[in-house]
Image (cartoon, rainbow, N blue to C red):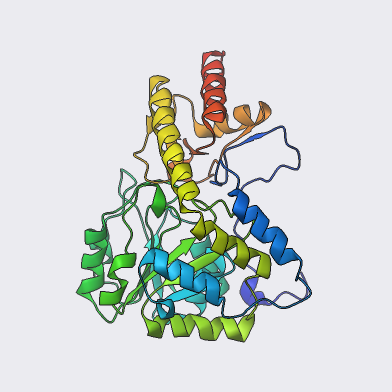
Length: 350
């Protein structure tokens, strides 16, 4: 550590979910899709691999065009990056000059990025029911970033409520991180054309089966997109590789598959919610591909008990949510095994 810049000496990096190196785990800890990519996506990756000696198209024109058509915006209102994490990092570098505000329980990278880039952060506690009270943000003059639906709580806000926040101060930027919006949330993308101070960030990691490909996007008016392009082209114009770009294009073109996977995920989520409630769990209403649950036994005890039985879920060692587990929605068979295993654990002597 002797060469570490002292400005970063207190930095606590983001801790990703465990990625086991064996195939014998049921993996419900990182909110990946339960389904593989469409066959055409795999074919597109293989085809793109034949030209890996060449740099990818830095403009990502084909993918930008397809995504803009799908989202109903112009190509100049789209920005693409190496996962939404890269885009969020660019936002923190370039769009937080007056500081940033976000909830105390939300996506962990927000606090990491604020410290990494030396940005003053106002961290606002969630309400007792773990929901976001937007009224508390009304007087803040810096940038506001909200995950909607929020993670790890799975709770979403209606678009109208966030739009009111956007309208209150046109000089204040509001960034909405919509990583999970396809699973039941209400997107702010249709309103970008009307508000210059609104930026929406999305990802292909969850609903599009491309967590391993690393592809994200932002939607905003041209001035905001140009800022992100300036940062990207000052950092790495080729951050989205050719195989990922080809996969993203093929995924957008495979809409029936995308919609079928979404429908099945929502159905399995509903089944799991009821099954867990029957076991005595409190399950927060979810608009995501995961559930945030509190059981008859603390999450700090259930997490290792499940791991010992080859089921991975996510537990956060934070005072307000240490009794909860975040459980990704897997296949129906995986969720049936989870429920059966939890039932066995709960009936064992504690």
